[in-house]
Each structure stands twice: as C-alpha cells, then as structure tokens.
Image (cartoon, chains in turn red, blue):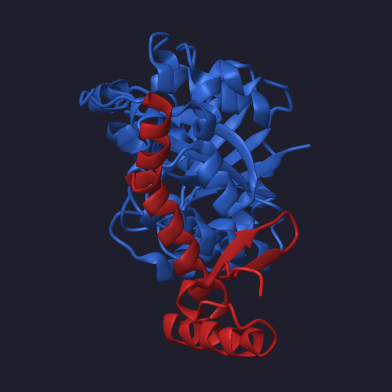
Length: 86
Length: 270
C-alpha cells in the first residue's frame, strides 16, 4: 500500500510539477515555440497521424522537450485508444 | 597557468557572491594566490560578505580609469594574505566599464594570481557580459526553483554563445528533506533540465546567514555543511576528484540523489 500510495502521490507532488512546467517554458525560451504554436503543432500532428491510425486521441498527445548532451529532443507521446480486434 | 573563473547565474539572490567568497577563501586556504573581483558595479556586496568593507580606498572603476594602480585597489583578506579583493565601485553604474576594460583588468590580475574569481551581477545585460569577457571558465549558480533554473538555462545558452566553453553548475540551497518528500526538484531533475556538468551541490544551511552576518565565510567554519560543500567545489576546481557523496554526510544521500527510486511514504495518513 505504502509503495503504491507514494507512487501515485509522486505524480502531483510539487517537484514534478516544477520540472514539467520548466520543460514546457524552455521550449518557448530556447526555440521560440510559443504555447499557441505548440497547441497548433499537436493539432497538426493528430491530423497527420489520424490519416494512418484512426485510434488516435488528439487531446492526449503530449509534446515535451528533452535535453541531451549535444542536442535537445522534442518528444511526442501519442497514445492510441485500445480497440478490440475487428 | 592562471585561471579566470566567472561566477554567474542570471537570477539574483541565488548565492553568486557567497559562492565567490567561499571558493576564493577555500582556494587561498590550499595555498593558491587568489583575487576575487566584484563586477557588480553600483551594487557592491562581495566586500561585506568577506568582512572587508572598512578597508576600501579605491575600487575597480578607479583602476580602469587610471586614478590608482591595481595594487593600490587590492584589499588583503583578514585571514589569508594571498587572498585579495578588488571591490566594485558603489557610486557608478555598469556603463563605467567596457568588456575590453575587463579583459585588460583580468589579464593584469593573471600576472599576479593563480586564480581570479569574478563575481558577476545578475541579469543578461552589459554587466554580465563584462563579467564573462575575460573568463576562461564559467560557473553557473542556481537553486532548485523554477525561476532560478529557467534563468540558468538562459545564461548557459549565452555563455555558450560567447564561446566560454561548457559552464559547470553549482546547485545551491538544496533542502534534502524537501527533495525526499518530492517537494523540491532533485539534483537529477535539475541536471536533466539544464544538461550541464555539475561541480557541486551546496545544502541549505543557516550557518551561511550567521557567518555572513559577521562578515566571515562559511568555509572557515568546520561545522558548516555548506562550508564543507564549498571546500569540495574548490578542490574540484583544482582538478581533484572529490566524490559527490561526500557533499552530504547525512545518511540517505544516495537515495536522495536517485530521488525517483527512493520515494517513501512520508505522509501521516496511514
């Protein structure tokens, strides 16, 4: 119970909130990708992916900045709705 | 080979001056000849942190404008004769100095000292640019807070744009207990965001306030955890391999370092 409890609490503790917010704001600071443009990017991504994968959930796409040694990466997390096999 | 090292941060109030005073003193304790330069023109502070405010006759702008020789403006530390302070001017502003002036000044200091530590003003304007103009290396000070880390990221970009190599990070005022509760970003979190090399972690320590009150520096106080952390950073600057675990001698440091694996329920609910 304790472990599960703390695992779930980690999601909404303030340290992870700080980290998530920082990574979002740094996309704008470093690459001039404003929140508006980011929203548009997600919509466009959803549109393109939906052409191939109907089970895309456009609202759950997450695009985040990841810092690397020599490069930064923009990572898109695109969840698929689990559909029963036809 | 003398080294000019600038200590900067972007955001104000994260501990640049404290870091400069402590590293300067720690380097001098190990026998090096050290000059600490207050480049925050108009907001002089390194003098009071080191307890040397009563000895100032000339300042950095006097040297640059030729009203005195460099030697006349250098103030000897109370404890270490090989540690000298070049104070900032208090009644002038940053426009009194140019980047070329700072390069000439740091070159003059190189001739007489092993280490020249430059305490940069906050911000990203000319005061900051002057402070890094003559630097061989840059240390970035930040605290594990959103605003400080954001500004540090901006400064890292600028330092790299000015071709000052890869700056190293001093993570200041870590509160281990808050980190283990998940209420403060961990060392790992900050390193993941900033993606630069770490040179030291300084725990939040009330001894910094009490020593600053007296105009002493924490590295002189063996009981101060922050003081020991600064001494370790100085050793790393000199090229020694100092394990990071030694930064915090309390049990559970490794757990905290790998914060994500160490979440323990701290709540009193159950």
